[in-house]
Image 1 (cartoon, rainbow, N blue to C red):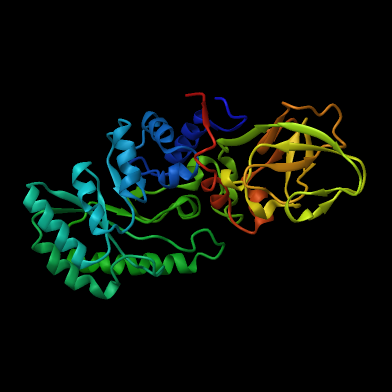
Image 2 (cartoon, rainbow, N blue to C red; image 1 turned 180 degrees about the horizontal axis):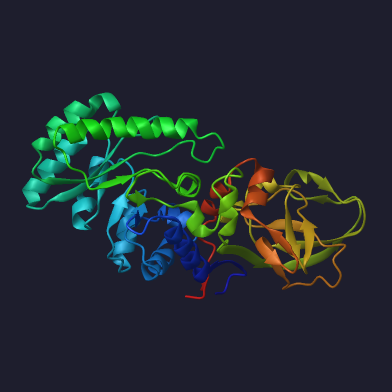
Amino acid sequence: MTRPVWVEVDLAQIKNNFKMIKDLVDKDVIIMPVIKADAYGHGAIMIAKALCKAGADRLAVALPEEAVELRKSGISLPIQVLFNISPEQYRLLFAYDLIATVSDSTTLGYLNKEALTKGVKLKVHLAVDSGMGRQGFLIEEGTGIARDIAGYQGLEIEGLMTHFSCADERNKAYTYYQWARFNKLLKVLEEKNISISLLHASNSAAILDLPGLPFNMVRPGIIIYGLRPSENIVSSDNFKKALSWKAKVSLLREIPAGSALGYGGTYITKRPSMIATIPLGYADGYPRQLSNRGFVLIGGERAPIRGRVCMDQILVDVTDIADAACGDEVVLIGRQGDLEITADDLAEICQTINYEIVCGISKRVPRIYLND
């Protein structure tokens, strides 16, 4: 590593979090970790390899291109692409032995035709729109789906899935409503003698709060990385965070009182101040909303951000930190001494969610893996 900005990912924590999930579900339930968006910013290839060692049954991504990256790195587990894809991407399903998720009859027909032409059988999971409105067959389409499937010899309809939109809320009424609608479509298919082996809907929140739902596969996402689905899911606090984000002070200067700092001069020093420059900014995924509001850890103490977050740098006030020096370690997310900054802390300041914070960390920030 040469750049003094980096992310550390503890692979032992990833494996431990996976083991905790395994202990939560029935022994016959398949666990399909979700590693889309570069494994929520943690680095998909290394996370996938760690999960393989931990005993993951299969993996899920959002894009076929994400799956291709995993295949090229040597990952041989079954990989499901969770969302609709465009016709230009269909060839990747066949070329890299991927599992498709389908939400419409047109796509089913096209994939069946392609599979027959290539002389293969493509595994497909049917998405059900149980009440999120994002993707999936409507419940009312059940009879038509069954009719179509019966004639598709090029497809293996392996799974039926939906996604719970409110499982991370305290009130689970809507989640049970979605489950009932999912079951309604499943019953229609079963009455038409359509046999489907894998049923899945439970995300991280549902795994923790609704363990009794009768699905034989689960899709943990955020808890794999030790982050909580929302503040309502208290039991997620037992999982351990795997990611820390660090840097080093690149410049330290004494700035006179009354000096403007950063673009727009949005902060004026009220006293002679020691200002440290940290060589990262919003191009690295550090949110601009933290301008004049965020803080970092230096020397085991909190140091406030002064001025606007720039594309490649931030300024922090270390006037009250004794012996601060160039080269000091800076913690943006993680622990230093007795203090900690979490992705949730940054998300609260930015009025967003921890998912967005970690997914937003740019690929130009090197990832260092510990405890492989």
